[in-house]
Length: 362
Image (cartoon, rainbow, N blue to C red; front, side, top):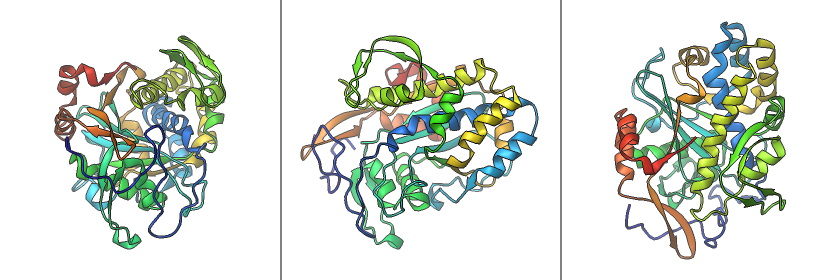
């Protein structure tokens, strides 16, 4: 994809996202997506729950959470693993999406501002968090049931073209499978109701600012250094995109937040105290929709019970920024195919070791 095709959707200035093209199935109501920017809270909570819930040493709370989480068929048939195991056997790939489709009308314009592929190797002893740039230039396949003919555009438009919800995730997963050749064992979409409260339940999260940032939204100044931030400051900081490397710093901050959230929950004993964990569960149980295929969520959680914050590695997709028709895109580079092969063949450990420039310190 070194010679990108002519872009047919996603027009806007190089400094902005550009408007989402009108939904072929009906006009979209484009709104300011403040809630969509809360993706990190959602993704962080999801990772904590999946990786640490079993640490309580019992199944009652796990099953209670399982009963409270909405289930749906989120993956496209073409994007789901062939002959999925009912038991939890590695390697595993999960698609994590931060969005707001459960809080807005299905006809409203929506974006998936966070797209993360969580890869667990065969031993299930590590988690590789591969951030998919929201501005990644891709080919969206056609969706006949929506009268959508396909488009060449940014990947975060897939959710909107699919009208959000199940069809949006299916279009997104289909697109990723076409691009990477990877199939998924499950998916989770997380909206944002209750997730700000979840950060506050933890008493905030320690965030390490790596470069001075002046918020374009609140004018708050974030000086370099580590400090515990409340949910409002966390949200504000993680929304920032005005960095010399474009969106790559924001991706790194996403991954750092996931680990920091998990660290905070572990250090506070949240994952070993049923009462504390239950308060967190109550804050987020209604904000997730999951698809675990043939596997049960309790079995999945129990299989991952030994994972800890230090077992997480952040990965960037090798790519560069390009401007086409005055619109800024992220374009996969030659090294991207090597990452995709490593993901398909469960060889990420070796790939990470030989490509440190595409690994984030989290």
